[in-house]
Image (cartoon, rainbow, N blue to C red):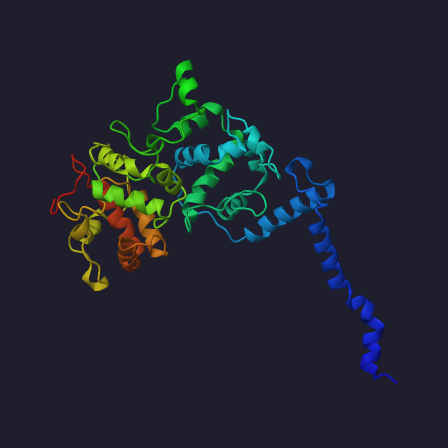
Length: 373
């Protein structure tokens, strides 16, 4: 007579075979090639509904803790410039339909001018920052740069109601654009808007950068500009805005680009800054021994090291943004970044605001800050 345990096993053995049998059948079907994975075949209606439900619920659940940062500025020009160069080719934009090649992906990239309004801000942020598996939607290329994705979210929320002319003005930035002549179309082709020009975001000899979160490049040293471009290219300085641009610049032209901006008399940002500029000046000139903070001008004064940026004339918003990145662990992939991270982590929020306001207000006519001024 069989023991009770063996009797129970004997009674239930057919059910125990179901999981491995199911796995074997699934592997056999996959091996057979009977499943048509062609994008042109589309999904069955039931699968389409299942995948859409799974995607929406995943986004809703995983984005619930995301909160936009306070005090957002007018970020639309910066966001539109990036969107048009990197997103519009799949998702379309005001005045530009979805590229037919990408419209035939499976699943189809949604036209965001029509679809973005169906999502909450935190959900748009989560999708853009983390990407979506099995869709071709990548995660944000600037690792850890949630601040940049919130800038993009601001644009996505405005996109459904944005007129074509307003979008074009934002996407152009400081870059001029004219209808190309037929000869130029034949030899060079065209884009509806310029997508590879630095002027779209950065300042020119006659106009400041399009947004307070964009740094002033004119008058920076050649060594610093080269270092920054190479760090973006090598993914040692993270920015979803700058990394694709820096990679697109040929190595042989990096020096020419650095020379151009080093000689450019770019206007400073004109936005007012709030903060204790007297405290900011003390930090710049003498530091804070109690917090083991060296004076900013020990490295950032003139003449000093050529491979560090000049801070005078940068917007307070940009300077605060960078210091907060260092405080939270960003931009620490290089020796320069690790040094600044240690300094930023010793600064109080009030000191960050004060020193940013001081340098924003301390622009000299030639774009430099002299010690003791």
